[in-house]
Amino acid sequence: MDHYLCFNGEFIKEQEFSIPGNNRAFYFGDSLFESMHAYSTFIPLFKLHFDRLLQGMEVLGYEQPTTFTSSSVAAIITRLLNRNKQFKSTRVRLTVFRNSGGLYLPTNNSASYLIQTSTLDFDKLAHKQSSMIVDIFPNQIKCAGELSPFKTGNALLYVMAARYAKLNRLHDSIIINQHGRFVELSSSNIFGIKENTLITPPLQEGCVAGIMRNFIIHQLAPKTGYNVELKPITQKDFVDFEEAFATNAVSGIRNIVGIGTKRFYSTKYRGLQQQLEKLMF
Image (cartoon, rainbow, N blue to C red; front, side):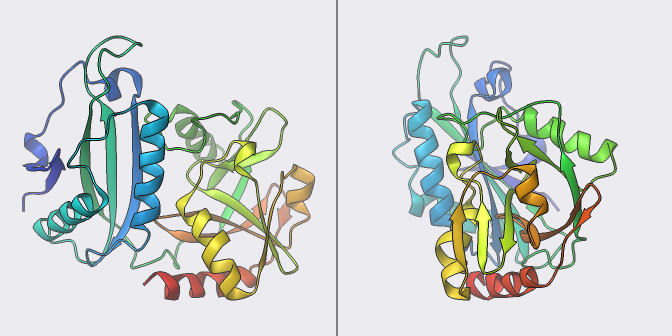
């Protein structure tokens, strides 16, 4: 069966789609993207995703196409999922990039968008994924700045952190900032649990302004009786947590059972995970 994507509102068979050689996303990583979880054509956190994307476009100086609105993009995603007959859990990737022209200095700021879908190997949230052993990625730091909250096409840091984890037989690795404090994982934000408080780094530490992170802080925590503390996390802070978990918009909450030789409990996060699925779906 043919699989389709959508480019600037036009549905195209994947095998027939191509980009020009001077595409700025390809040349310079001049792009932003959102990875979303759709279930039966419904994206629970779509508004949060779209708002973050618009904020990133403003920071990068992209001109928003007149047809690129929340309602129009949501409708296109629904049509694309129906066309591809994807009615269970599906990853939806929405990419926006500056159109061709110029070298580092662009000659225009008009933008195009691309929507792609791929079926996930789990239903709703990722309950059956294995718990994670993680450790620090020592080869490159991430500093806070105006781009750090967004998911950009320049993702080499995350590629290298993910490779490091695989080469060292870890499930993921922790990216640190210039102060040696914990920022995030290669594809997730990071939380610790201490008594009745969820602890995660503030955006000023350099982490992505994760959509699931946002939802947990403002929706899940209040509904489950947890306090939230945004504070810098050192390695010593982290090993003192009772439990730890990773979050992203596609898989929800994933348990971290260890860093190095330290092992964590795995009880409170299960209740959070169950409540999260109820709230989202």
